[in-house]
Image 1 (cartoon, one colour):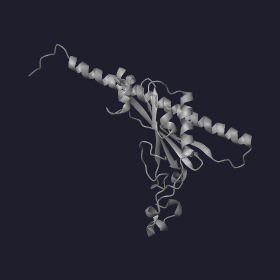
Image 2 (cartoon, rainbow, N blue to C red):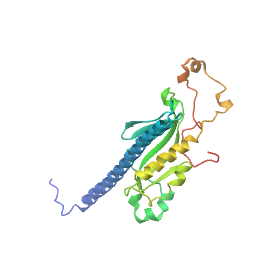
Image 3 (tube, rainbow, N blue to C red):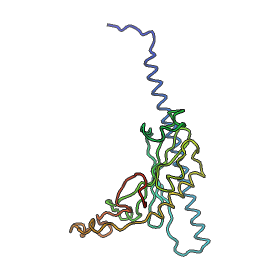
Image 4 (cartoon, rainbow, N blue to C red):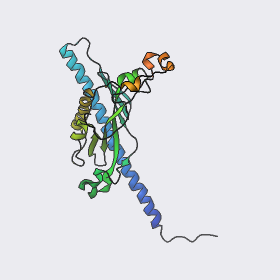
Length: 236
């Protein structure tokens, strides 16, 4: 039996409008975040060149390595002084939970679409963890950059990173901001030292671990022996 033709399909069009609207918003946020990641990569590459120039002027014969390797459009590694900073852009777009402080700002209340953000994570690892493939070693999320449809940004992070960039809706992420972010991440990492693990935690070692090559030994190494992100703890 033939179905009767509909006089209108407003409900369907409303659904399509939602698909187009939400999809367009996420594409815009994704594009802004990808551009911000590209700025960070350009900034790091320029810092590497500046470092080479500085070492040449100082006539340093064996300068401390300071080098960057781009793994993809979404990931870059910066190695220096025994540390590795990994900048990683997530390919998805996120919205903040209702109880997040960002959701209570006048900036977001004026336009809820501003709460949709892309994320660039900044991790700190020991360079040797990657060099010697120590897969049990720990890393540390020291900051994450949120970028929205207006290219406004803010950062959740440790010390310098968290305190310097927490005014959402006021600043857009440009070249100067990208350089400040990268320099703050480097400064934090330099002063974030490797601590001796508690004796009780490492007093027992399996025979199989000791028989493994020393460079690949599965004793866990990390600056704080924990891969996590949380609010600043006293003394960190």
